[in-house]
Length: 156
Image (cartoon, rainbow, N blue to C red; front, side, top):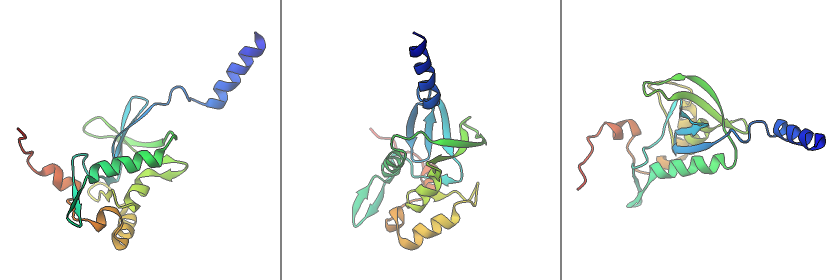
């Protein structure tokens, strides 16, 4: 019995919070980690229902941004550095997987924009994606902050 207890305690120490970590990706720049809603600082991704176009084809760029984030995170649990709260009571943070910033990854992949209104941190990454015509930079798109300002159409 003592040996079993020792094995269980050692397993929990090695696991480090395995059982406590739960993750849900809400959209391209928002996750819920252990019940805490976290909005990535310094970037803005397209809204889930936002579309872009390329070669006369409609692309669900908001959903592409979300799927890109899901794929990048994989089976990892992001580690986030909190920078405070926003008006919606979400935690504002920069999150990392394997020491790589998820925000920087999304911007360099062309599916997030440097949110200059709040930060200058990712401008060089945006310029890289824009110059290489990566992701949305190869499409016709609307900036997410402009998309959100448009009046919502009544769908019947």
